[in-house]
Image (cartoon, rainbow, N blue to C red; front, side, top):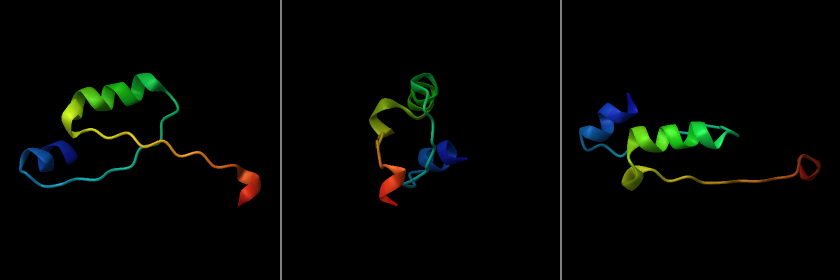
Length: 48
C-alpha cells in the first residue's frame, strides 16, 4: 500500500522493527534506495 501511495507522489512514512539486516535490505530493494531511510535507535531498558 505504501509503495502505491509513493508511486502516486504521496510522502509515506512507515515504521518497521527488524533485527535482521536481510529483512531491512528486502524493504530497501522494494522501496528503492533513493526513497529509503533507515533510522537506528538504541535505548537501555533500565533508563525507562
